[in-house]
Image (tube, rainbow, N blue to C red; front, side, top):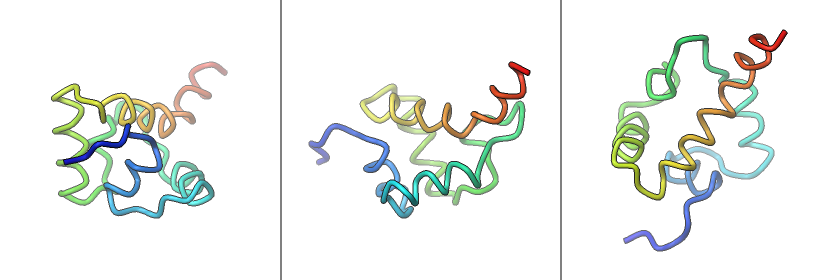
Length: 84
């Protein structure tokens, strides 16, 4: 059972991704979502990563807030261009 409060670092660990701050920042910079692509639809996820993201987001559990945060971070370029 998972007892820690989910954080972005822990989410990256759960996804099997490097989870140091600089690695998270690099991942976010290199994996910006295209317009009209939802987080779980991105082609850079493995099937198990996609399943984790989808199932926890749909169940609206403690992970869902961190998954929403990741989605916003991966959509920064879209938001920036929409505001231009």
